[in-house]
Length: 440
Image (cartoon, rainbow, N blue to C red; front, side):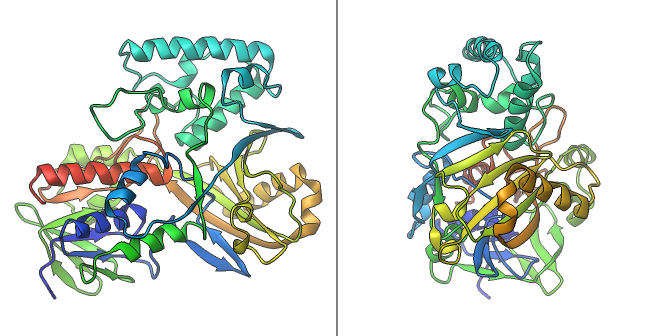
C-alpha cells in the first residue's frame, strides 16, 4: 500500500467531506468504517419500493453556506437541489405558513396576538444586545422571553429550540441563534436564526437533493481523485496509536501507519480508543449530550400532503417535523404514491423503543385520521441526528485534541448551524487547523 497521509475514522457526512477535501489537496486518504455501508445518518436506502433517507432533511444556506463553499471548491460533480418551499405550522387542526416576516408574524393567528407583540419586543431587545456585544453563551432563550406567554406559544418556541439546537427552551443558549452565516471570520456578523425566523423571507436558500440524501454521498464519491481515497467497510477501529502524536490505527482487521488521524465518530467515545487522554479533556467529553430522534416513514397510496414544504407539528408528543420527500422527487415512491417522513424529538433518556413507536404513530393517526387507510408502508428509524446538543452546561468537543496530529470532526465539534451544515462547518474548521499545522 502507498504511504497514507491521513486516516479518517468514520464515513458519515463529516468523514466523507474531510476525505474529499484532503484528497483534493493532494493527500492519500484511507477511510475506516465499522459498518457495512457508508454515509452514516446522511444516506438513502430502499424499503418496499420506496427510497427513504436517514431522517427527513432540509439542506440550508445553499447560496453561500459551508456546504456550498465545500462543493464549489472540491466537488467535481454537484448534486441537484430542488427548492424546499415553505414551512408550515400545525397546531390542532389548523395549518398555516410559518411567519417569516414581521407582517406575517403580526397576523399569525395560531399564536395569541398579545404573545406576538411581546415576542417582537423581546426580539428587538435581543437584537440590540447582540449588536452591543453581549455574551449570550450562558443566557438561555427562556431568560429573554416575556413571563406571561401562553402554553401554545411556549411549545412553539420549545419546538424551534429542539429542532434547531437539540435542547429545550430552558437550556438553549441565545448564542445558538446569533450566528454569522458565512465561514469568513472577517465578515460582519448577522443575527442568524432569530433574524431569519422573524425578519427575512426565509427558506429561499434551502433545498432537497434530487434522489434523496444519497445524491450528496454519491457526488462526494464521484469527486474523489482517482486512486487517492480508499474506503474500508466492516473494519472496526480498536485503538489509535500515539507516541509524540497520532501515528496510526489498529483495527479488527489490520494496522495502519499514517501522518495524521481524523476521528469523525462520537467525540465522547474517543477515550475508548486512547485510554491515557488528559483527565480534564475526558471529563469534558463525558458531558456531551447527544440528540436522539425517532423517524417514521410512511408510504401512502394517496397524496395526502399537497404542500411543497415541511410541517412543524407543535402539538405532537414528542414534537414532530414532517417532510413529504416525494413531493420534491416523485421517483422516491411508486407511481401515484407518496413518501412522507416524520421526525420525532426529544426522546426521553432510557426510552422504550416500542412505546415511542406506538406513541409517535398514534400521534400521526390522531392528527390525520384519514391517513391510516392509505398506509402502504411503515418504516422506523432510531437516529442520532446531532452528535451534541447545543445547550447550557452541555459539553462540546473541538477540532483540536490534546494529541498532536489527531483531530476530530463532526457535529459535536462546532457550535454552528445544524445537521449537514454543522458538519460542513466542522470540516471547514478542520481544514483551517490542519493548514495552520502545516499538513498541507
